[in-house]
Amino acid sequence: MEAEVDKLELMFQKADSDLDYIQYRLEYEIKTNHPDSAGEKNPVTLLKELSAIKSRYQTLCDHYKRVATEQKEIKTRISTTLNKTMTRIQELQKLTDVELLPPTEEEKTATEQLKSHREHL
Image 1 (spheres, helix red, strand yellow):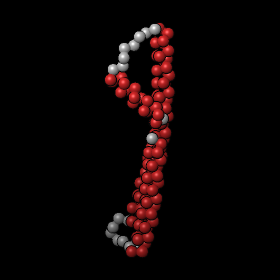
Image 2 (cartoon, rainbow, N blue to C red; image 1 turned 135 degrees about the horizontal axis):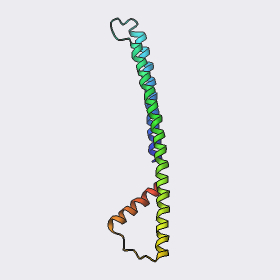
Image 3 (tube, one colour; image 1 turned 90 degrees about the vertical axis):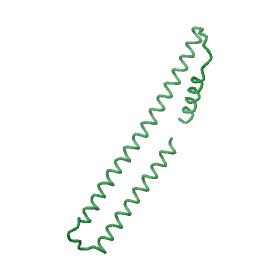
Image 4 (spheres, rainbow, N blue to C red; image 1 turned 180 degrees about the vertical axis):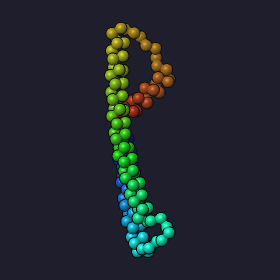
């Protein structure tokens, strides 16, 4: 999970860098090739809009990072709570001498999935 977040963060950084380069190239091209563009939408206005889009993009990136961090924390808390609950159930079973039926295939699958998720955390 962490590697995926790091990979996405690098992709966002590259996209941000690419946007900076595009903006620089557009400004340069406009200044050199179209100093007086009459009757058309002002290229400077377009560049300002690009800056606003870039700012919104950065806000989304920051929001994504916070969500990813919170998601990781929640998964850890759920896993911890589940482990404690399973331990308490086993202790209660021992104390009450309750004999359990063998687990069903569905329960076995769920247990394996939980173990797999705990190992990733």
